[in-house]
Picture 1 (cartoon, rainbow, N blue to C red):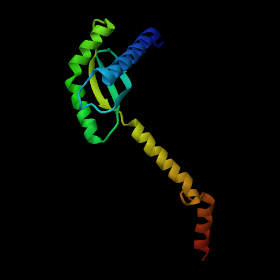
Picture 2: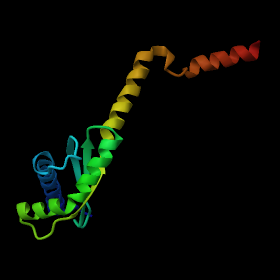
Picture 3: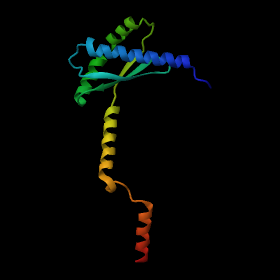
Picture 4: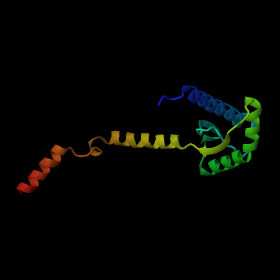
Length: 141
């Protein structure tokens, strides 16, 4: 079944517009002191467009993440109202804020990959030839 490209393109444009507008609001307009350095990494719209999941990269520890999410949840109505006025749309999706931990996972994977590269032969598993030869020597003895 062919993909309806027009709907997909419209959905992608809406998600990108939401990302840009919410980012600008967080950076300059929301003056809540609980909001730490935060940027919107991704916006994922539901298939029907009724809700949008906003992924946030938050600088700081777990306490900063918790406080920032609480502040954004409190400002959700204001953000939706501002989006309605700025975008001139009839419907603005329900906003769901989530912490984006993909950068932390990426850094952890890169660290582990770097550790195996530095380890040299110690980190690499034995080859089948050496394990077969060791097994033959043990049987012959």
